[in-house]
Length: 475
Length: 155
Image 1 (cartoon, rainbow over the protein chains, first blue to last red):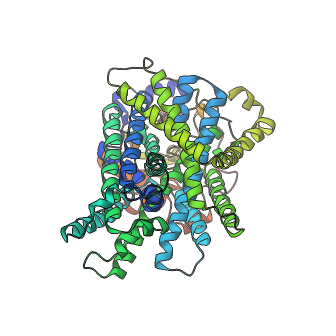
Image 2 (spheres, helix red, strand yellow):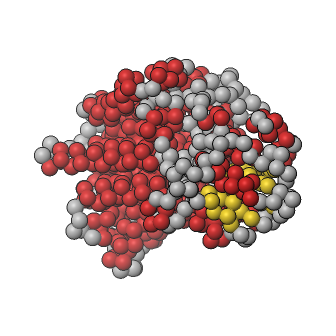
Image 3 (cartoon, one colour):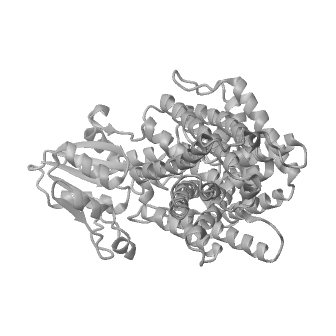
């Protein structure tokens, strides 16, 4: 009996097969919110404050707006192509160029590695608030390795765990906001702080620096494309949940930034490794500072963990997908027989991020004077900005392709603003810090080596199948 | 009796389905539901290693992989007697298998236990173990055979 006839008589009608999707709009909203919230605010607020001065909340507002506009382009593309491939798929659809698609994939991967490194460093600074003894480098490495194990076990599949972590994150930021309200109610707030640009240079330039950093606090939203395929009614749900999640995160960010600016001297924020903690340590709320500090450090760690988990999932997914298509060596597609996790990809990602952390720490000790967190976050901004630019361009180019009745259409005027905004930021970041290009090149080189290995030592089929990351069918 | 046969796309899950056919009485089984679960939040939502398409390198989405794996396992029951249903769900695999068993009023759940490896014993238990824990009915866990046996030639 052949399989075809077998399948025919086992499926009398499509009505008999049950095809349930599980991601509702609300779940997606919290997925986006949790992913976005953890990524930057806890780690970066000090850096933004240092770059701009007391008015750094404006930088947050602008950064958030540009990111949300970029989110609109993603939403449009996701509703057209709800496969879980993200930027690489869209660029391939629009430009049909294998090297470009490969470059986007590797760039995205590199950005994700850099982000994970930066988040791990952020985690270790909050950890130091609880227990100062272990060296920060050790903590960040253990953190990355633990996340790899968690992914291997498959705990990440838990929707409940994701929701819980998101609620904890929101709780932390609500504590900060309550502190702000309390401070204002006591009449101590000096609103002059909010319009203060303390940097010596041009305020507009300072603001741009802040925007670039604040923008990083929003990255991560593109990971929502991971779950696009399992979203119920994606064409309606996805844009709302994505933009809603980002807008909610943006409002929370701006409020938190205003609170930080009002309650803590700017210099303190800028010098702090764990800047939001300074707000708590200012002792404004009538609750013992020690207790609050501990609680808040734990919350911050949960937030960072949530975001980093999503980053690690995305990395191993991309590596797995690339290996399936023979873009990188096939071992990355190895799935553990019962855990169903791509263990080789997980180990590789953990090794790369750990390597970044170690190299960063060594350079720091050697007195190069490079701040690793700042470095990594800037590098990530350069890479992600380039990807976002391409995604918006892809969205515009695909305006008339694959339109169906209920595909979402982002306002074109906003997309144009998005392109300008992303481009201005990219130009600024590169001009301001050309050395970051060296770091980018280093990260991309890792991908290039993978590509070369596959090209020269890969199987024969590799040459034939290498039509970029996605030759996937239309739906 | 309604039997739920779970597949995670592994060869072991196909072996489990064959094992059921090898001993169960098709007259006592009214329905077989083959259930595959896509996990949207996991690193790999679904990995199909058993369908014909699995060998080709055409890129497929997790959902397409799951559909193909479920169809492949369902094909094992063709001509066996009971009505065969193909069901795809999404979420956490153990949860969804148990939920499917509950809503279908299943009398038996068949799952494969992937490996005898250390990680399954030490790290929180596998899907099979979690299903045993909360299934509303008896569970048949098909363990991997010691090398070489049970890989029967196709009938």
